[in-house]
Length: 486
Ligand code: SF4
Ligand code: SF4
Image 1: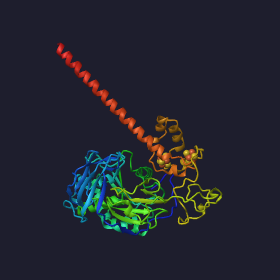
Image 2: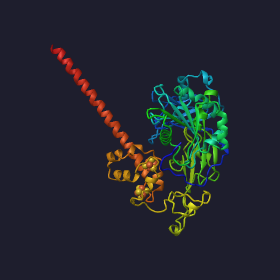
Image 3: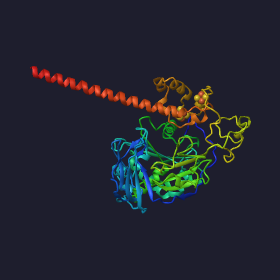
Image 4: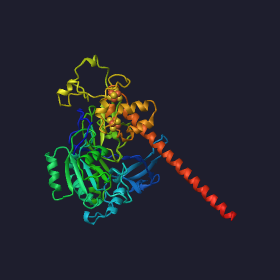
Protein backbone atom coordinates (compact mmCIF):
# COMPACT_ATOMS: atom_id res chain seq x y z
CA UNK A 1 0.00 0.00 0.00
CA UNK A 2 1.35 3.43 -0.86
CA UNK A 3 2.02 5.82 1.97
CA UNK A 4 2.24 9.40 0.72
CA UNK A 5 4.49 12.19 1.85
CA UNK A 6 5.60 13.08 5.37
CA UNK A 7 5.96 10.76 8.34
CA UNK A 8 9.03 9.79 10.30
CA UNK A 9 10.54 6.76 12.00
CA UNK A 10 12.38 7.99 15.09
CA UNK A 11 14.99 5.68 16.57
CA UNK A 12 14.31 5.72 20.26
CA UNK A 13 15.87 3.52 22.97
CA UNK A 14 13.71 1.47 25.30
CA UNK A 15 11.82 -0.66 22.74
CA UNK A 16 9.65 -3.18 24.63
CA UNK A 17 10.74 -6.81 24.27
CA UNK A 18 8.33 -9.34 22.77
CA UNK A 19 7.92 -10.94 26.16
CA UNK A 20 4.44 -10.47 27.68
CA UNK A 21 4.31 -10.35 31.49
CA UNK A 22 1.05 -10.60 33.42
CA UNK A 23 0.48 -7.67 35.80
CA UNK A 24 -0.56 -8.76 39.31
CA UNK A 25 -4.34 -8.74 39.76
CA UNK A 26 -5.24 -5.83 42.07
CA UNK A 27 -7.91 -5.76 44.76
CA UNK A 28 -9.28 -2.49 43.43
CA UNK A 29 -10.01 -1.61 39.80
CA UNK A 30 -10.85 1.92 38.64
CA UNK A 31 -13.01 2.30 35.52
CA UNK A 32 -13.13 5.84 34.16
CA UNK A 33 -16.53 7.01 32.93
CA UNK A 34 -15.09 8.80 29.92
CA UNK A 35 -13.90 6.95 26.86
CA UNK A 36 -13.32 8.18 23.27
CA UNK A 37 -14.99 11.51 24.00
CA UNK A 38 -18.15 9.78 25.31
CA UNK A 39 -19.37 10.23 28.87
CA UNK A 40 -20.88 7.05 30.33
CA UNK A 41 -23.72 7.04 32.84
CA UNK A 42 -23.36 4.50 35.69
CA UNK A 43 -25.69 1.50 35.42
CA UNK A 44 -24.93 0.46 39.00
CA UNK A 45 -25.50 1.96 42.45
CA UNK A 46 -23.07 2.52 45.29
CA UNK A 47 -22.28 -0.70 47.21
CA UNK A 48 -23.99 -2.88 44.57
CA UNK A 49 -22.40 -6.24 43.82
CA UNK A 50 -21.71 -6.88 40.15
CA UNK A 51 -20.74 -10.01 38.25
CA UNK A 52 -17.86 -10.24 35.79
CA UNK A 53 -18.89 -8.61 32.49
CA UNK A 54 -22.05 -6.94 33.84
CA UNK A 55 -22.49 -3.38 32.48
CA UNK A 56 -20.98 -0.82 34.86
CA UNK A 57 -22.10 2.11 32.71
CA UNK A 58 -23.78 2.90 29.40
CA UNK A 59 -23.43 5.63 26.78
CA UNK A 60 -25.90 6.45 24.00
CA UNK A 61 -24.02 6.90 20.74
CA UNK A 62 -24.40 6.50 16.99
CA UNK A 63 -27.83 4.92 17.06
CA UNK A 64 -27.33 2.53 19.97
CA UNK A 65 -25.91 1.94 23.42
CA UNK A 66 -22.38 0.86 24.31
CA UNK A 67 -21.37 -0.55 27.68
CA UNK A 68 -18.36 -0.56 29.95
CA UNK A 69 -18.38 -4.19 31.15
CA UNK A 70 -17.07 -5.02 34.62
CA UNK A 71 -13.49 -6.36 34.26
CA UNK A 72 -14.02 -8.50 37.40
CA UNK A 73 -16.72 -9.36 39.93
CA UNK A 74 -16.89 -7.03 42.92
CA UNK A 75 -18.61 -4.32 44.92
CA UNK A 76 -19.04 -0.91 43.39
CA UNK A 77 -18.23 2.57 44.68
CA UNK A 78 -19.17 5.50 42.43
CA UNK A 79 -16.63 8.28 42.47
CA UNK A 80 -18.39 11.32 40.97
CA UNK A 81 -15.44 13.64 40.77
CA UNK A 82 -16.02 17.37 40.94
CA UNK A 83 -12.76 18.19 39.18
CA UNK A 84 -14.34 18.46 35.73
CA UNK A 85 -13.70 14.83 34.76
CA UNK A 86 -16.60 12.42 34.26
CA UNK A 87 -15.76 10.46 37.42
CA UNK A 88 -15.18 6.75 37.76
CA UNK A 89 -16.55 3.48 39.08
CA UNK A 90 -14.30 1.80 41.65
CA UNK A 91 -14.61 -1.97 41.82
CA UNK A 92 -13.52 -3.66 45.03
CA UNK A 93 -12.76 -7.06 43.56
CA UNK A 94 -14.29 -10.16 45.12
CA UNK A 95 -13.30 -12.59 42.37
CA UNK A 96 -10.91 -12.47 39.41
CA UNK A 97 -12.62 -15.41 37.68
CA UNK A 98 -13.55 -14.99 34.03
CA UNK A 99 -16.91 -16.40 32.91
CA UNK A 100 -18.39 -16.51 29.42
CA UNK A 101 -21.48 -14.33 28.91
CA UNK A 102 -24.27 -15.51 26.62
CA UNK A 103 -24.14 -18.42 24.23
CA UNK A 104 -21.32 -18.49 21.70
CA UNK A 105 -22.30 -18.98 18.07
CA UNK A 106 -20.45 -20.08 14.93
CA UNK A 107 -19.62 -17.40 12.32
CA UNK A 108 -22.03 -19.00 9.83
CA UNK A 109 -24.96 -18.71 12.27
CA UNK A 110 -24.17 -15.20 13.47
CA UNK A 111 -26.12 -12.27 12.03
CA UNK A 112 -24.60 -8.80 11.66
CA UNK A 113 -27.18 -7.39 14.05
CA UNK A 114 -26.43 -9.97 16.78
CA UNK A 115 -22.72 -9.32 16.35
CA UNK A 116 -23.13 -5.53 16.63
CA UNK A 117 -25.18 -6.01 19.78
CA UNK A 118 -22.68 -8.45 21.33
CA UNK A 119 -19.70 -6.19 20.59
CA UNK A 120 -21.48 -3.11 22.01
CA UNK A 121 -22.32 -4.96 25.24
CA UNK A 122 -18.78 -6.35 25.48
CA UNK A 123 -17.24 -2.84 25.22
CA UNK A 124 -15.51 -3.75 21.93
CA UNK A 125 -17.52 -1.68 19.43
CA UNK A 126 -15.70 1.63 20.19
CA UNK A 127 -12.41 -0.04 19.16
CA UNK A 128 -13.63 0.10 15.53
CA UNK A 129 -13.09 3.28 13.48
CA UNK A 130 -15.41 4.11 10.59
CA UNK A 131 -14.48 6.32 7.62
CA UNK A 132 -18.09 7.54 7.57
CA UNK A 133 -18.31 8.83 11.15
CA UNK A 134 -14.58 9.39 11.86
CA UNK A 135 -15.26 7.52 15.12
CA UNK A 136 -17.00 4.27 16.02
CA UNK A 137 -19.47 3.02 13.39
CA UNK A 138 -23.24 3.42 13.66
CA UNK A 139 -24.86 0.72 15.76
CA UNK A 140 -28.28 0.76 14.10
CA UNK A 141 -27.09 -1.03 10.96
CA UNK A 142 -27.32 2.09 8.80
CA UNK A 143 -23.74 1.58 7.55
CA UNK A 144 -22.18 -1.60 6.21
CA UNK A 145 -18.52 -1.49 5.24
CA UNK A 146 -17.20 -2.55 1.85
CA UNK A 147 -13.79 -2.97 3.47
CA UNK A 148 -12.44 -3.78 6.90
CA UNK A 149 -8.75 -3.08 7.48
CA UNK A 150 -6.96 -4.90 10.28
CA UNK A 151 -3.74 -3.11 11.10
CA UNK A 152 -0.75 -4.97 12.58
CA UNK A 153 1.65 -2.01 12.38
CA UNK A 154 2.46 0.42 15.19
CA UNK A 155 5.28 2.81 14.28
CA UNK A 156 4.84 5.24 17.18
CA UNK A 157 7.38 4.56 19.93
CA UNK A 158 6.10 2.36 21.57
CA UNK A 159 2.62 0.94 21.05
CA UNK A 160 1.75 -2.73 21.57
CA UNK A 161 2.92 -4.50 18.42
CA UNK A 162 0.58 -6.61 16.28
CA UNK A 163 3.11 -9.44 16.07
CA UNK A 164 3.28 -9.62 19.88
CA UNK A 165 -0.52 -9.81 20.14
CA UNK A 166 -0.55 -12.50 17.47
CA UNK A 167 2.09 -14.47 19.39
CA UNK A 168 0.05 -14.21 22.60
CA UNK A 169 -3.48 -14.67 21.26
CA UNK A 170 -3.07 -16.10 17.72
CA UNK A 171 -6.08 -18.39 18.11
CA UNK A 172 -8.42 -15.57 19.13
CA UNK A 173 -7.14 -13.33 16.30
CA UNK A 174 -7.82 -16.06 13.74
CA UNK A 175 -11.30 -16.55 15.24
CA UNK A 176 -11.95 -12.78 15.07
CA UNK A 177 -10.94 -12.75 11.40
CA UNK A 178 -13.49 -15.51 10.71
CA UNK A 179 -16.30 -13.43 12.28
CA UNK A 180 -15.46 -10.06 10.67
CA UNK A 181 -16.98 -10.91 7.24
CA UNK A 182 -20.43 -11.04 8.95
CA UNK A 183 -20.21 -7.25 9.22
CA UNK A 184 -19.17 -6.69 5.57
CA UNK A 185 -21.27 -6.13 2.48
CA UNK A 186 -21.47 -9.01 0.03
CA UNK A 187 -18.09 -9.45 -1.73
CA UNK A 188 -16.49 -7.11 0.81
CA UNK A 189 -12.76 -7.38 1.45
CA UNK A 190 -10.66 -7.60 4.59
CA UNK A 191 -7.19 -6.03 4.26
CA UNK A 192 -4.45 -7.02 6.72
CA UNK A 193 -1.57 -4.54 6.87
CA UNK A 194 1.87 -5.81 7.89
CA UNK A 195 5.38 -4.45 7.46
CA UNK A 196 7.36 -7.37 6.02
CA UNK A 197 5.46 -9.97 4.05
CA UNK A 198 8.30 -12.53 4.35
CA UNK A 199 8.54 -12.27 8.17
CA UNK A 200 7.81 -15.63 9.91
CA UNK A 201 4.75 -14.08 11.61
CA UNK A 202 3.42 -12.89 8.23
CA UNK A 203 3.93 -16.38 6.81
CA UNK A 204 2.05 -17.95 9.72
CA UNK A 205 -0.80 -15.48 9.28
CA UNK A 206 -0.90 -16.38 5.59
CA UNK A 207 -1.08 -20.09 6.43
CA UNK A 208 -3.84 -19.53 9.00
CA UNK A 209 -5.92 -17.43 6.60
CA UNK A 210 -5.24 -19.54 3.48
CA UNK A 211 -8.50 -20.37 1.71
CA UNK A 212 -10.22 -17.16 2.87
CA UNK A 213 -10.34 -15.37 -0.48
CA UNK A 214 -11.78 -12.22 1.11
CA UNK A 215 -8.58 -11.64 3.14
CA UNK A 216 -5.89 -9.63 1.32
CA UNK A 217 -2.49 -9.11 2.97
CA UNK A 218 -0.74 -5.80 2.21
CA UNK A 219 2.58 -4.33 3.28
CA UNK A 220 2.99 -0.78 4.57
CA UNK A 221 6.19 1.08 5.45
CA UNK A 222 7.04 1.47 9.14
CA UNK A 223 6.81 5.23 9.34
CA UNK A 224 4.84 7.08 12.01
CA UNK A 225 1.85 7.78 11.78
CA UNK A 226 1.08 4.97 9.33
CA UNK A 227 -1.17 3.40 11.99
CA UNK A 228 -3.53 6.38 12.14
CA UNK A 229 -6.91 5.39 10.64
CA UNK A 230 -7.14 8.50 8.46
CA UNK A 231 -3.65 7.92 7.05
CA UNK A 232 -4.46 4.25 6.36
CA UNK A 233 -7.76 5.24 4.73
CA UNK A 234 -5.98 7.78 2.49
CA UNK A 235 -3.26 5.23 1.59
CA UNK A 236 -5.89 2.60 0.67
CA UNK A 237 -7.77 5.05 -1.55
CA UNK A 238 -4.52 6.01 -3.33
CA UNK A 239 -3.32 2.46 -3.91
CA UNK A 240 -6.53 0.58 -4.74
CA UNK A 241 -8.69 2.07 -7.51
CA UNK A 242 -11.51 -0.38 -6.64
CA UNK A 243 -11.95 1.39 -3.32
CA UNK A 244 -14.25 4.29 -4.24
CA UNK A 245 -14.75 7.55 -2.40
CA UNK A 246 -18.31 6.63 -1.33
CA UNK A 247 -17.23 3.20 0.00
CA UNK A 248 -17.18 2.71 3.76
CA UNK A 249 -14.03 1.50 5.46
CA UNK A 250 -13.76 0.25 9.03
CA UNK A 251 -10.34 0.00 10.67
CA UNK A 252 -9.31 -1.85 13.79
CA UNK A 253 -6.09 -3.14 15.26
CA UNK A 254 -5.10 -6.68 16.14
CA UNK A 255 -6.04 -6.29 19.80
CA UNK A 256 -9.58 -5.39 18.78
CA UNK A 257 -9.75 -8.46 16.49
CA UNK A 258 -8.52 -10.73 19.28
CA UNK A 259 -11.18 -9.24 21.59
CA UNK A 260 -13.83 -9.94 18.90
CA UNK A 261 -12.59 -13.53 18.62
CA UNK A 262 -12.79 -14.01 22.41
CA UNK A 263 -16.23 -12.39 22.61
CA UNK A 264 -17.86 -14.27 19.73
CA UNK A 265 -16.36 -17.73 20.33
CA UNK A 266 -16.25 -17.81 24.13
CA UNK A 267 -18.63 -14.98 25.12
CA UNK A 268 -15.84 -13.13 26.99
CA UNK A 269 -16.20 -9.32 27.16
CA UNK A 270 -13.31 -6.85 26.95
CA UNK A 271 -11.59 -7.15 30.33
CA UNK A 272 -7.84 -6.85 29.76
CA UNK A 273 -5.33 -5.08 27.51
CA UNK A 274 -1.77 -5.73 26.43
CA UNK A 275 0.26 -2.62 27.19
CA UNK A 276 3.71 -1.87 25.74
CA UNK A 277 5.78 -0.36 28.56
CA UNK A 278 8.82 1.29 27.00
CA UNK A 279 10.86 4.41 26.43
CA UNK A 280 14.35 5.54 27.45
CA UNK A 281 13.26 5.90 31.08
CA UNK A 282 11.74 2.40 31.39
CA UNK A 283 14.01 0.09 33.37
CA UNK A 284 12.37 -3.07 32.03
CA UNK A 285 10.85 -2.40 28.59
CA UNK A 286 8.36 -5.17 27.86
CA UNK A 287 4.70 -5.90 27.13
CA UNK A 288 2.36 -6.35 30.09
CA UNK A 289 -1.06 -7.99 30.11
CA UNK A 290 -3.22 -6.08 32.60
CA UNK A 291 -6.82 -6.20 33.76
CA UNK A 292 -8.73 -3.02 32.80
CA UNK A 293 -8.79 -0.69 35.80
CA UNK A 294 -5.34 -1.75 37.08
CA UNK A 295 -3.34 1.26 38.31
CA UNK A 296 -0.70 2.30 35.76
CA UNK A 297 1.87 2.41 38.58
CA UNK A 298 1.52 -1.40 38.82
CA UNK A 299 2.82 -1.78 35.26
CA UNK A 300 6.01 0.07 36.11
CA UNK A 301 9.02 -1.04 38.06
CA UNK A 302 9.31 0.27 41.61
CA UNK A 303 10.22 3.94 41.70
CA UNK A 304 9.51 4.71 38.01
CA UNK A 305 6.59 7.06 38.67
CA UNK A 306 8.81 9.69 40.27
CA UNK A 307 9.78 13.34 39.86
CA UNK A 308 12.79 12.33 37.76
CA UNK A 309 10.66 10.71 35.05
CA UNK A 310 7.59 11.63 33.04
CA UNK A 311 5.16 8.79 32.36
CA UNK A 312 2.92 9.13 29.30
CA UNK A 313 -0.26 7.19 28.72
CA UNK A 314 0.15 6.35 25.02
CA UNK A 315 3.16 6.65 22.76
CA UNK A 316 5.87 9.28 22.43
CA UNK A 317 3.96 11.62 20.11
CA UNK A 318 0.36 11.35 21.25
CA UNK A 319 0.71 10.24 24.87
CA UNK A 320 -0.63 12.34 27.76
CA UNK A 321 1.18 12.68 31.10
CA UNK A 322 -0.39 10.50 33.81
CA UNK A 323 -0.48 10.78 37.57
CA UNK A 324 -0.19 8.05 40.17
CA UNK A 325 -3.97 7.50 40.24
CA UNK A 326 -4.38 6.71 36.51
CA UNK A 327 -5.66 3.26 35.57
CA UNK A 328 -5.59 1.11 32.42
CA UNK A 329 -8.54 1.99 30.20
CA UNK A 330 -10.45 -0.03 27.59
CA UNK A 331 -8.39 1.48 24.73
CA UNK A 332 -4.91 1.77 26.29
CA UNK A 333 -2.02 -0.03 24.68
CA UNK A 334 1.07 1.93 25.68
CA UNK A 335 2.90 3.55 28.56
CA UNK A 336 5.99 5.57 27.63
CA UNK A 337 8.59 6.59 30.22
CA UNK A 338 10.81 9.61 29.56
CA UNK A 339 13.61 10.66 31.89
CA UNK A 340 13.85 14.30 32.88
CA UNK A 341 17.24 15.86 32.13
CA UNK A 342 19.65 15.97 35.04
CA UNK A 343 21.13 19.32 34.11
CA UNK A 344 21.99 21.54 31.22
CA UNK A 345 24.39 19.92 28.76
CA UNK A 346 27.69 21.83 28.67
CA UNK A 347 28.38 23.14 25.14
CA UNK A 348 25.68 20.77 23.82
CA UNK A 349 25.25 22.88 20.66
CA UNK A 350 28.90 22.28 19.69
CA UNK A 351 28.63 18.47 19.71
CA UNK A 352 28.20 16.46 16.49
CA UNK A 353 25.04 14.80 17.82
CA UNK A 354 25.77 11.06 17.68
CA UNK A 355 23.21 10.67 20.46
CA UNK A 356 20.44 12.82 18.91
CA UNK A 357 17.12 11.39 17.79
CA UNK A 358 16.22 13.99 15.19
CA UNK A 359 14.23 14.49 12.01
CA UNK A 360 16.99 16.82 10.77
CA UNK A 361 19.66 15.02 8.72
CA UNK A 362 22.40 17.37 9.97
CA UNK A 363 23.35 15.36 13.08
CA UNK A 364 25.98 12.62 13.13
CA UNK A 365 23.29 10.18 14.36
CA UNK A 366 22.32 9.81 10.67
CA UNK A 367 25.42 7.63 10.31
CA UNK A 368 24.18 5.01 12.79
CA UNK A 369 20.95 3.07 12.83
CA UNK A 370 21.11 1.82 16.43
CA UNK A 371 18.68 3.38 18.87
CA UNK A 372 20.43 2.20 22.02
CA UNK A 373 23.13 4.88 21.92
CA UNK A 374 20.65 7.78 21.65
CA UNK A 375 19.27 9.94 24.40
CA UNK A 376 15.80 11.33 24.64
CA UNK A 377 14.54 13.30 27.61
CA UNK A 378 11.81 15.83 28.32
CA UNK A 379 14.34 18.60 27.61
CA UNK A 380 13.39 21.08 24.88
CA UNK A 381 17.11 21.86 24.41
CA UNK A 382 16.64 25.60 24.50
CA UNK A 383 13.88 28.14 24.84
CA UNK A 384 10.84 28.76 22.58
CA UNK A 385 11.39 31.10 19.62
CA UNK A 386 9.23 32.56 16.83
CA UNK A 387 8.72 30.54 13.65
CA UNK A 388 11.82 30.76 11.43
CA UNK A 389 10.01 29.43 8.31
CA UNK A 390 12.38 26.46 7.99
CA UNK A 391 9.60 24.28 6.50
CA UNK A 392 10.48 21.17 8.54
CA UNK A 393 6.93 20.88 9.85
CA UNK A 394 5.62 20.89 6.29
CA UNK A 395 8.06 18.10 5.30
CA UNK A 396 6.99 15.98 8.28
CA UNK A 397 3.21 16.47 8.04
CA UNK A 398 1.59 13.25 6.78
CA UNK A 399 -1.60 15.07 5.77
CA UNK A 400 0.16 17.47 3.39
CA UNK A 401 -0.76 20.52 5.50
CA UNK A 402 1.25 23.69 5.99
CA UNK A 403 1.56 23.79 9.80
CA UNK A 404 3.59 27.01 9.76
CA UNK A 405 0.80 28.80 7.84
CA UNK A 406 -1.86 27.40 10.17
CA UNK A 407 0.23 28.57 13.10
CA UNK A 408 0.43 32.11 11.69
CA UNK A 409 -3.34 32.29 11.09
CA UNK A 410 -4.12 31.03 14.58
CA UNK A 411 -1.53 33.33 16.13
CA UNK A 412 -3.54 36.27 14.82
CA UNK A 413 -6.82 34.56 15.70
CA UNK A 414 -7.86 34.12 12.04
CA UNK A 415 -9.56 30.78 12.66
CA UNK A 416 -11.70 30.95 9.49
CA UNK A 417 -8.60 31.28 7.30
CA UNK A 418 -7.01 28.38 9.24
CA UNK A 419 -10.14 26.32 8.56
CA UNK A 420 -9.91 27.09 4.84
CA UNK A 421 -6.20 26.13 4.88
CA UNK A 422 -7.01 22.63 6.14
CA UNK A 423 -7.12 22.85 9.94
CA UNK A 424 -9.96 20.25 10.16
CA UNK A 425 -7.73 17.73 8.32
CA UNK A 426 -5.07 17.79 11.05
CA UNK A 427 -4.96 14.35 12.73
CA UNK A 428 -3.02 15.58 15.77
CA UNK A 429 -0.08 13.25 15.14
CA UNK A 430 2.29 15.75 16.79
CA UNK A 431 5.11 15.37 14.27
CA UNK A 432 5.16 19.10 13.51
CA UNK A 433 5.69 19.91 17.22
CA UNK A 434 8.41 17.25 17.42
CA UNK A 435 10.45 18.52 14.46
CA UNK A 436 9.99 22.26 15.06
CA UNK A 437 13.39 23.81 15.96
CA UNK A 438 11.56 26.77 17.51
CA UNK A 439 9.80 24.39 19.94
CA UNK A 440 6.36 25.69 19.02
CA UNK A 441 3.51 23.66 20.49
CA UNK A 442 1.78 23.33 17.12
CA UNK A 443 -0.22 20.19 17.83
CA UNK A 444 -1.71 21.67 21.01
CA UNK A 445 -2.55 24.90 19.17
CA UNK A 446 -4.28 22.98 16.34
CA UNK A 447 -6.26 20.65 18.57
CA UNK A 448 -7.52 23.56 20.69
CA UNK A 449 -8.53 25.40 17.52
CA UNK A 450 -10.35 22.29 16.24
CA UNK A 451 -12.32 22.09 19.49
CA UNK A 452 -13.20 25.79 19.14
CA UNK A 453 -14.35 25.26 15.54
CA UNK A 454 -16.50 22.30 16.57
CA UNK A 455 -18.09 24.27 19.41
CA UNK A 456 -18.77 27.26 17.14
CA UNK A 457 -20.38 24.94 14.57
CA UNK A 458 -22.54 23.29 17.24
CA UNK A 459 -23.61 26.68 18.60
CA UNK A 460 -24.46 27.89 15.06
CA UNK A 461 -26.49 24.70 14.41
CA UNK A 462 -28.32 25.10 17.75
CA UNK A 463 -29.08 28.77 16.99
CA UNK A 464 -30.38 27.85 13.53
CA UNK A 465 -32.58 25.10 14.96
CA UNK A 466 -33.98 27.52 17.60
CA UNK A 467 -34.66 30.12 14.88
CA UNK A 468 -36.44 27.50 12.76
CA UNK A 469 -38.58 26.44 15.73
CA UNK A 470 -39.53 30.08 16.39
CA UNK A 471 -40.45 30.58 12.74
CA UNK A 472 -42.63 27.43 12.73
CA UNK A 473 -44.34 28.52 15.95
CA UNK A 474 -45.01 31.94 14.44
CA UNK A 475 -46.50 30.41 11.26
CA UNK A 476 -48.70 28.07 13.33
CA UNK A 477 -49.86 31.02 15.41
CA UNK A 478 -50.61 33.01 12.26
CA UNK A 479 -52.62 30.16 10.71
CA UNK A 480 -54.52 29.75 13.95
CA UNK A 481 -55.45 33.46 14.15
CA UNK A 482 -56.52 33.48 10.46
CA UNK A 483 -58.75 30.44 11.12
CA UNK A 484 -60.24 32.20 14.11
CA UNK A 485 -60.97 35.37 12.10
CA UNK A 486 -62.83 33.34 9.46
S1 SF4 B 1 -0.24 17.47 14.08
FE1 SF4 B 1 -1.49 18.02 12.29
S2 SF4 B 1 -0.37 19.66 11.24
FE2 SF4 B 1 1.06 18.64 12.67
S3 SF4 B 1 2.10 17.12 11.43
FE3 SF4 B 1 0.36 16.07 12.39
S4 SF4 B 1 -1.32 16.28 10.90
FE4 SF4 B 1 0.28 17.74 10.29
S1 SF4 C 1 9.12 23.77 11.91
FE1 SF4 C 1 8.63 25.43 13.36
S2 SF4 C 1 10.05 27.04 12.83
FE2 SF4 C 1 10.07 25.64 11.09
S3 SF4 C 1 8.49 26.47 9.68
FE3 SF4 C 1 7.47 24.97 11.01
S4 SF4 C 1 6.62 26.20 12.69
FE4 SF4 C 1 8.19 27.46 11.68
